[in-house]
Figure 1: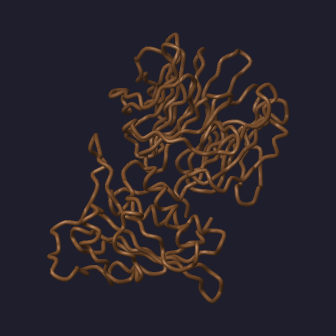
Figure 2 (figure 1 turned 45 degrees about the horizontal axis):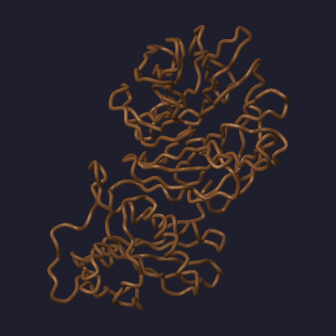
Figure 3 (figure 1 turned 120 degrees about the horizontal axis):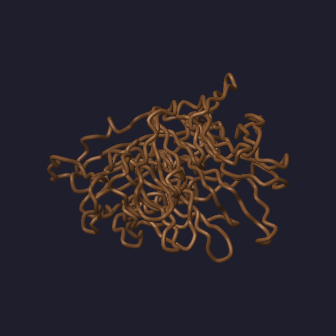
Length: 436
């Protein structure tokens, strides 16, 4: 889907070099090193965007919430602000922001064009260097105000960390409502912060394991509407749906290949064994990748499509294995205590996330792609199903507590855990790529 939000003009070049009177430019602008083990959140001041009545404050609040939730930024309370910004295009009084230790400052404005579109622009300032770091202007219709704010937050995140943000994204998940013994499960989609929930199925049939295509607004998922689990493709924007294939036996955990041309899944045959198959979505031809007498399941491609991670109990209990995309070189990489499941390759290619069950606890963790460096990020009574943010810095999963499952996110340090608000119970999240 083409984006309805297009940067009209990069204004950083026009304003770069502005300095406060009597202030010497710094040799380097403020930045965050997110590759350090312990990152101290950066104090940042985000002012209400000028104009647009309440719209400016709304955009400012969304940008603030996005950056704060990342754990990398510490937004300063607006009651501490000394200068009241009246002209976001003019250089601020940097001394007023330095005294409250705002190392970065965001100003902006929002207004309506003659054709009814919203125009929003922001400027990011380094207060100690006395310089503008970046600035952009966007146009959108009223329905996409939140997207404008998320895109601005992504731009600020990228400028200060050097890495892509993840705020202008969506999450598809299973919405669960009703009594526990008669739970209604609907396919749903929302913004990554829990806003703009939309239902993609009517709840008449059980739906499971939705997964995003890496390059289209399309998802694959399983449905029991025929009495047996079947894999479907769904175009999110049009609602068009098609059956991937009517496989004999049970089908589990479909995922797209990185180029979006294949779906990989596990199929349970009459002999009771579950093996991994890949289907070419153009030809509908199926290739068997494993052929064991064990249960092989939960396959996930590496970002370059050359390898697949999966779980197998061929060694006596479920552990994590890696193989070539053609099924060659099957190699066990996990050797820890407990049972491993739901491995997912990071979009950065450097880590594999997993669920681990040990000692009566469920854990969400990560390991390097050779199985070394295992780290547990979150532990709980019952939690599973990690999914990666597109920048590979944050995981989302679901935790069953207080009567039903809820969505939770955690960053790679394991210290920044956040609850994701949903109207009903929610499970099995899958994070989209950045929207276009």
